[in-house]
Length: 419
Image (cartoon, rainbow, N blue to C red):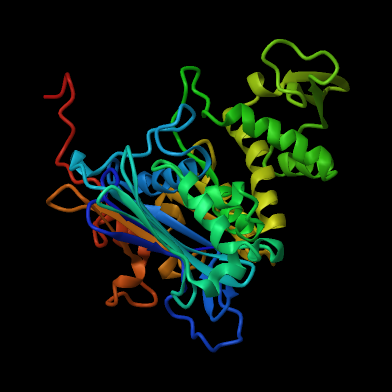
């Protein structure tokens, strides 16, 4: 689970800002169930958080920062496969710092990375007592490593412990300035750290940009994932029932894979076509699911799999503008499905939809706002920071009237033809 995400000098974020999923009003020694939260160690951690803000407020940059961390962990800095991950605040040329607190099973860790386009300047992994497992700093063109001997057992297998000093030195020397030491350790068979690396790397992120035909960039890969997920877990009937539940009265879905006759560019196991079958006046009719069904229907099919997956495997899904193509009541049901599950699944998302601003859905520390200050830097703050709110206050009305900021301020739009 993610506990905290801290960003500094990344896109619209200048000074350090933290998005926290730790419940602010829960007692650490309480054994009672906390609403919308799961206990991790001595902490209650929220299953979801929502981020509001005006356009260009920087709320989506939180997602981009987590994506940047994952991309560097997978591809190094500036590799041919990597995305643009270094984008400092108004190009001030200082290193970007991204830090996360997260749990693996019941253990809590902090991982911090400071980097630019050319170098890793700081990389550090701590346990929940802030004891170093390893740290790596660039000082005057030379890396200095600190790996306490007490941490060897957290990094190395029993066989590797016999040659610990030499092995760790060899791995240090082979780690380039653009590669993470955590990645290099795992790739050199330090299996003890593999779960830590995977818990960061396997966070699911869905960003909002669309391609030229108006579909999300991840739409086809999500559909492939969903179709295979439903088949693997025998949930084909479940998704048909779910579609019926939102008003898509499909009788059945038929998936045609490319396994038998893959064509150039096909990925083995990919979906060639998905057909939705209807009974119209006693006659069976088919639609091409991807092209003939609504964008909302296709997205629901994909997200039914993603949400089911994170609930089943204690996963994390981070989504930019979850409301796109979804009715507000459907979004609410998705959130409630995560909240009422027995898993440690987490859903983090941005939205413009004020309908979700309700004490019936979220605790107040689950609601965050992103707003730019006079220096055009994004600041993050929680609804729980507003201590003057009363229990019966209408949060939605107060937000829309500017009580919490994070809304657009304009007198009117001066469009062509206005008088």
